[in-house]
Image (cartoon, rainbow, N blue to C red; front, side):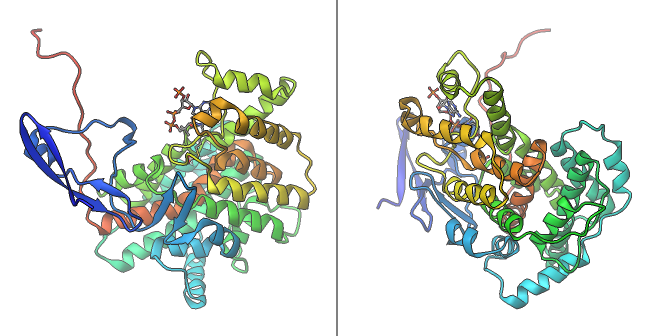
Length: 421
Ligand code: CMC
């Protein structure tokens, strides 16, 4: 293989080195492009641009492969807990039993949240979107835990990681409990990380809480499947905010805002709203397929298509099986699922979707599970955020430890040239 490429511009030949990843992805290193040639590249949406080198997550969109630190998503979803995957993503290896129990203890120690945050939560209007609330509460944590992270201090850095891992699930549960009008509670030290997430979200004030393995298993899988996805919109946001040396919590809060959009994490809410719309309209899936293909109609089939997966989304395969299991075990009969299945069957054989390689993505089925668990629709993206938290932390940590420069793209200016006033 060549180790460089040539660019001919203005009758001069320039050479740029090639960089090869461990999975043979090859990139042109254009760090010196502008200095040498005066040119920049233009790539809206960064469809062809690598922003960093990373050792965390590998995905092959053509083959439908997703691996965290080398382990397949299928193995991790079937054999690991969410906390083990958190450890793997952030610290690079799966934990030994001792390491797992140590981090569980550390998280328990940090799992209280300043009670004054409740006042901020209560100041939101009842109808405020949970993603806005979560992003604001995460930002507010900065004020209550003011020390900015010194990247050179391993202890300080570790503490910041533990704090956000411990406190974000409490904030998520408070956000949901406010939506549902339930009293705000804390974690229970006798439960595991994922059991606690379930307990804090679902415990009723008038009932003894007992952990339901079906619910905990489904949550574990959902959170693991969402835990990282390399340089997606919210993760790139976290890295770019952190590249200004803004703190970890501020960067995560920005990531939550980026995730909110319906083309990213907000799609899981949009899928259920779309399925409900189809049901209310009489259930004619063909009519909505036609709308999705009509270029004069802004309607898109939510939960279909992906920027990177152009064959199938491996997360969607796992989650589809989990959705069937959860609905069966909880005895839920959801007509929305029948509409989802009909849509999927039609789209998979429709030339428009086949030619454009549009397949169901992770969000197509995740909403159905959240719904079966009794999580309100507007909370779905919040669940995604809780799952993505370890990925954001791991990527932020990698970016800071690699001493990456501040993210600052250039532009091709197309406005007015100089003119007199
Ligand atoms: N329904 C109908 N047509 C679609 C859809 C869809 N869901 N997705 C893409 N297309 C068409 C699009 O109109 C375009 O057609 P043409 O070539 O004729 O102009 C072609 O397919 C390529 O689309 P694109 O928008 O250029 O593709 P992209 O890679 O920029 O966008 C996407 C990827 C996920 C934003 C897009 O497929 C989409 O909007 N899907 C629905 C929203 C969704 O489910 N998002 C969740 C993504 S998975 C969770 C996550 O990782 O955040």
